[in-house]
Image (tube, rainbow, N blue to C red; front, side, top):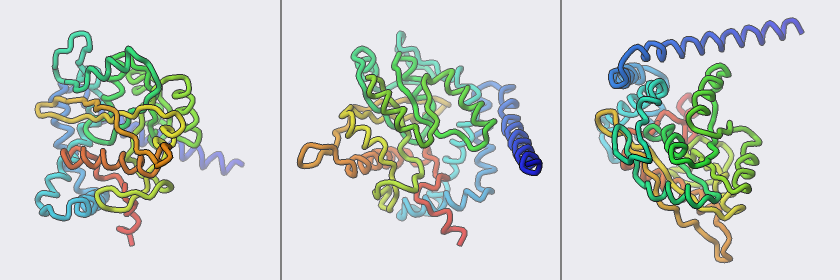
Length: 309
């Protein structure tokens, strides 16, 4: 027992130290003006990213997804993706300053919103619905926009593995994004209860998922989480795609698209397999339009193990 406690204490101490090391650069960024911090984080990530082991995975993902692009083109996409990761970290620090959209004013500032009538209609006619997005642009701004419009959306998110970082991220998100549900074994029941109460839920649909429906993404086999499809089958609710696009000059456009047409079987029931594929097709459309704004270092196709062999 003593040995076990010592091992756990050492592990906790290591995780605490790693968390402090991770927070230190963010504290330094706070000393800079927002634009300077975003630009610095972009340059720093472009310098460091290619030197990490994840760059090989990123390059392989890009080569598989865009076989017709040249190596310089793929490198440009990879560098933009690394820069986006750096920006994401800095945007956490300055999110309160960056998100300047006011639904009452409607004037575009640093953040502009496309689909305002949809936001207003969902607010004024409350009903259960699902909104989905992907790891593209600053996707964290989408629930902030929903909260700004007065929408009651419960967001499913995957916390970092480090508990100290996870707690800090959770506190940051909860203060700005409303209801949050950490991704775990029982999270699907929590989302189902929200829909049953007539509320809305938000889900990222492009995460790696080892067990799921066999689908394709960029022409390659991939497993897709059936959660959204099953919730639609159970509650027959509308499903809205939403995304964030980074614009030049440290600006952003948030887009809420019209509800998708849910695939149906011959008997009228929801086609769960077809629904999962439709989500992938939507994300692929977004990524093809702005390939450098997606996080290509994710092991979406589960090939990291192959690269080690």
